[in-house]
Image 1 (cartoon, one colour):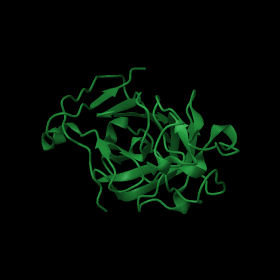
Image 2 (tube, rainbow, N blue to C red):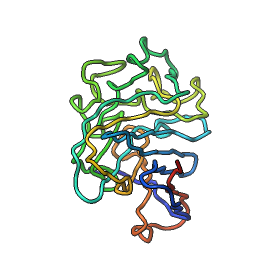
Image 3 (cartoon, rainbow, N blue to C red):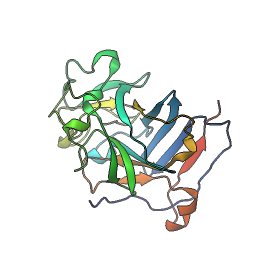
Image 4 (cartoon, rainbow, N blue to C red):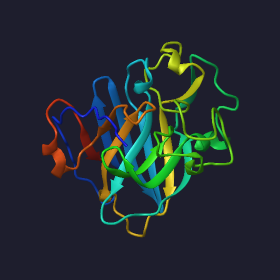
Length: 243
């Protein structure tokens, strides 16, 4: 699978100290695109909060955040998808079209519109991925909830329920948006299967994807040892959130 990267440069990579196993935050920025992925634990669950932090208006499909990928160092893990839920303060908006009814599943879940899969070959050579679109990796059985469907086919596909920008104007955008419901602007994903004593320092190579194609842009926060692989110009950061 060929995936085009928007990686242009690394001008800064900040890693701050924190207490043991505090949530880890990855920040992404490239041009008008910006995003945040926060990894945390809750018992044996891995909890990932994905946010489109851009204040720009979303005008084309590649302004929509549709996936997050990552690696786990020190051995593979078998995760089970539990839920995909709107973050506090987020909502469903209709981009050039009506919002589906119902717009969410019970409890503000959108689990039927997002999928998880491990053991993949994702962008940035990642093995684990969560996505609202297929990109020849995700299919109907991979959805968090296979018993429901809010919009479109019963498969992760297209733009529907991707994450739009904080500054999005739902009345603007090209024809590819028509009729698509989008999340404004954050989703919380829960995966079960963490072993006892799991350290969030094992999360690596976190990558976000925009758009609906394997050739659309992605941004990856490199691990410290891989900084030299990239040029200059893209501002990335990785920091640990204090308790």
